[in-house]
Image 1 (cartoon, helix red, strand yellow):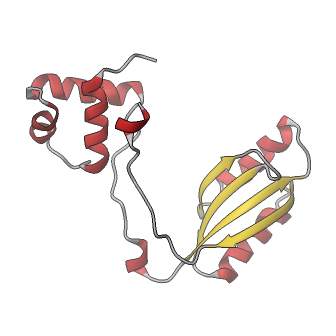
Image 2 (image 1 turned 180 degrees about the horizontal axis):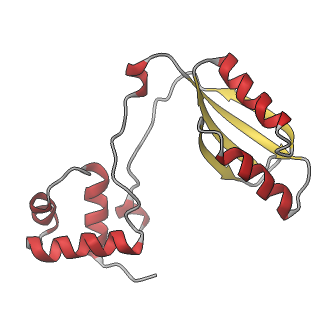
Amino acid sequence: MEKLDRIDFRMLSYLQEHGRATNVALADAVGLSTSPCLSRVKRLEHLGYIKSYGARVALEMLGDYVTVFTEVKLTGHRIANFERFLRRARDVREIMECHHVTGGYDYLVKIVARNVSHYHSIMEALLVSDAGIGKFSSYIVLGTPINRDCYPIDVLF
């Protein structure tokens, strides 16, 4: 990985919150002229530090839905078991996040569904697909008092 300098970090931090910023606005925010700023953005994109640009949709404005965190324990712990589960999970569009974790379970999965019944059908489909799930526990989200979209780059690095 190519080493980043403080300007690169400032650019990444700014772009997280202002993804639609013009090159002029970004250059002003980080103290560069426009040409070197654009070159740096292209470099950060090429190196993979900037994964994508997109809109954050207010899902709650579109209608009712439920978010469920699911702890998943696999039936076996060979590499093939993990690969099989991930192959099946990647095909489920309602799975928003899947984290390989330590502790009593193998994965922590974040799922969005129309309602509890829809969530139940998602899990049933995974179970019958031979994804290798031995046990799972569900936690329905009642509210999300903290939900950050931007990483604290200045604190972490």
